[in-house]
Amino acid sequence: MPSFWASTEEAWDYLIALARELRTALRYEKMTQFWAGLYKHWIWLGLPVMLAAATALWLLIAAVVAVIKKAHIFRAPLAAIREVEFLEAGRVVLSIEGPLLTTRFAGVQFELREMNGGRIDGRPCFFRARTSGFTTARMELMEYNLPRPGRYVLSMMGLGTVVAGDASHAVVFMRPHLLQSMAYVLAIVFASVGFIASLVFFLMRLVGM
Image 1 (tube, rainbow, N blue to C red):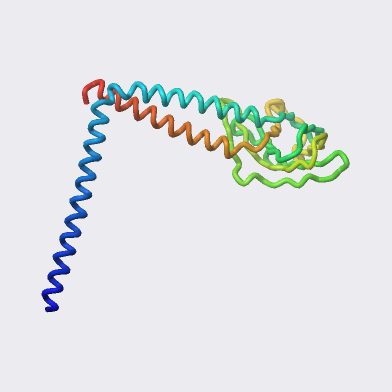
Image 2 (image 1 turned 135 degrees about the vertical axis):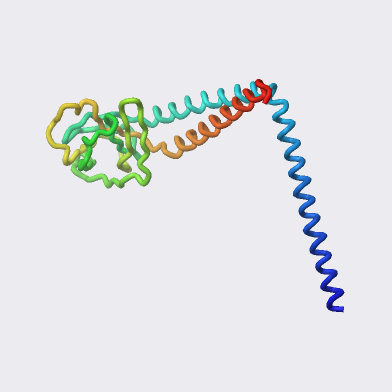
């Protein structure tokens, strides 16, 4: 009896494993047929997909540029002590801006105070977002929470004397926009991948591969 039940269990296990393998094979065959059919008609589907991806890219790039412009508050030239004015209270991000690979801000510390001398506590940005152009770069450094709109005093300690090239450096205040910008950047990456993949498949079908 034990041998009979053991052989029966083995048979059931074998049948279950066989059914699973058959189901996997059928799924693979269906997926293969689906992708083969899609690739076969890509010569007609590729153009509208590429057009949609290119349109999405254009809209997303325009949107991220608009987010950055909207977040921008003002740009302040370098100075050991400078009065700055904010029209609204709330969180602001201090960024440093200068030529690529500049070392002008090495050792410089920033302090923001109210006109009556009250210090505004700032904290280093957890993720120091960087943006770069052909000749300049910008990096987020500190974040402040302004209690009220008005004039403040910004101190740049350790700046030293004025040197040649200071005109190309600045401190930029912006509203926090990192999460929005990152979401748009990820969407731009996906749209770019979609456009490039569509273009590759379209060219492959065009040459008869």
